[in-house]
Length: 316
Image (tube, rainbow, N blue to C red):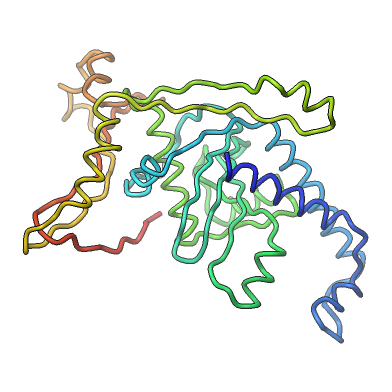
């Protein structure tokens, strides 16, 4: 739960920092600005109060969440699977995915997933890559940000941003960027992954939470242990890693990303839709809440020889 605790400490530090009495003049001194900042003390106080309220809600969500721990092997598989954005069922209205996701321009070290009135929203701390002074200042002063994974109704990006600001006043609203698209696809893959017939989950409760509360410490959230069995277990931990490492032929090979096949046309795929639910699960098919059947095609190495790296653009 390393990412969870780092995330929690960031939220606490941010709350403490903004809970101090800070005025416009001290901000100008910190930034080395002599002239007008463009906003009044009243505007700044309102901004700080928004941030404090938003962070209080964030801390409450973190304390009452459930933590899914994702190991590196499973995470790599989810990162290398394509997917499309449409409404899914979620296991809980509030849960945390304990995984560090690297993008071209930064890192998401754990992400909190919330079911709100417009859909599924991700609350995260996004850290930029780089070691220059500007990046360091941005990362140190960065509040948590939110963005939409999918909506319950079709909304334009401007409408989504307006709704998110109304719900999470004071927090930053991430625009559609390659980084956010990569995280969205990862979360969608994770939700579909939980429905795979070879995946089982088990809730692990902390037994010493009452003692922690008595000592004035924060309670620890429930952990959700993900158990992978059968063919999927062998593929994630044995076959897929070997495919990526063993290529000795002088010819080239390349990695085919994992992806989902969605059987939208029920008439065309009537034989699949005529199968019993248990038979579908045995064969690796999943059924969503709209009774649409899908199947996850695992990533694999195509061809023989030297493995060539390919660049991918994650589409919305």
